[in-house]
Length: 137
Image (cartoon, rainbow, N blue to C red):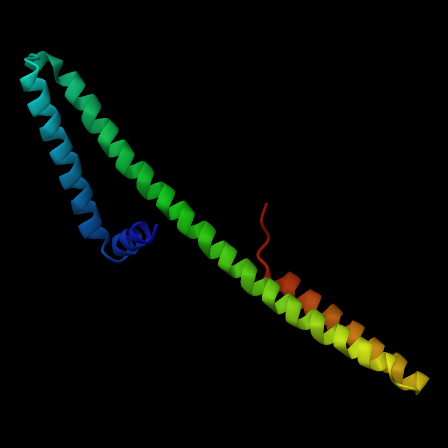
């Protein structure tokens, strides 16, 4: 999969070169199909077979590129989700630690204030995360 990723990165950076490589691939595939058709002694009227071969090869190139682009986008979304979950974990831990520490406090007013602060911090974090996450359908 690493060669595949490197190839996709190369294609993204050098779009013109990637398009030229696709054109050369389709040309070589078409030429190979011509040689095979001549070897099989098929007449020139059978060029529809050649056209089908070229179309299939070009379609395969487009399919592979499309699939790679979708895979890359999915990978990026997963990275964003992991980063989001890391933020959520950090904020939840801070709030829960503050609540746990407040339970050890003897002063009732101070304990309630610390718990309220932790809940408010948690609510603020949730509201910020909701605003930061793009809405998907």
